[in-house]
Image 1 (spheres, rainbow, N blue to C red):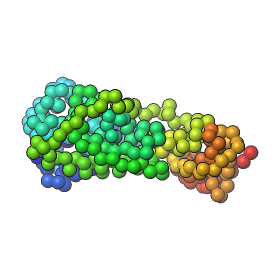
Image 2 (cartoon, helix red, strand yellow):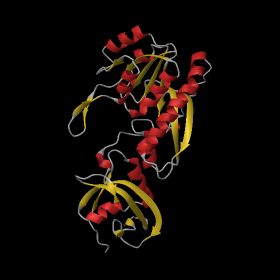
Image 3 (cartoon, helix red, strand yellow):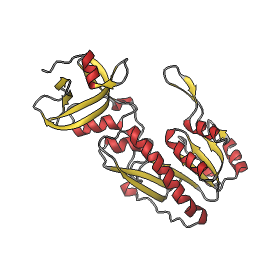
Image 4 (cartoon, helix red, strand yellow):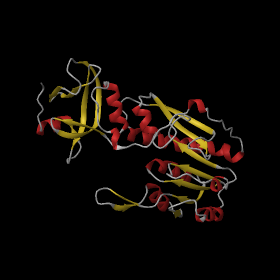
Length: 306
């Protein structure tokens, strides 16, 4: 099948790789322009661009899809199907209408729940026990198109957003390959989303980072997991601003006030939460330093237990 792929970050790479390795003819890739990143603000290529170039696939990086140039390229490429995975721009109606088999999108939630930019993170932040991936026809609304297929998975309590994203990316690629034959042969049955069940997963911001220790241990644990690797949960520990990378629920009761240090020794670093439970900090990152274990932090910065 002649396919054009739209995608940008790491999440999209397994789907592109799967298409190439399955023998489909990926005739072009559209991805976001190179952007400055990291402290040096060095111009960085999107992961999908790197993957496409390694596979010898032509790459386009338009600033806009609405000036007619991208449409002209797509007409020349003449894809039967357009596949989208975390591209980062809304496809205009004239592009959606171009391929005979339509445009399909891999979305990292069980739609209609968690439409929008950060479904993986918000599923964890909200304490969901399950999530999944959805393959859907693209429509003009935000993640509102008819559902072609879904795959569900459990969210383990020790899995953060970065780990879950990598897992869902692989699941999305597998779901895409399993559904392509039905699409090509016209055997697929699309199901409309139930609008009454829809929810939204907005973009993340650093405003979500500060930890409120009056919340429950589970809520704070989910905050740490859901905001990893960006923007990361943050708190002050004995005057040191720290990012919290990994925590663990202990089930240990405490009478201490929320935010108080329950334990700070070789056995662990535990803080009191608003529900009277102690949350253990396993890994953290003091401001200006590297990520480290709690025990390594305490070795250089002992914290009194009051």
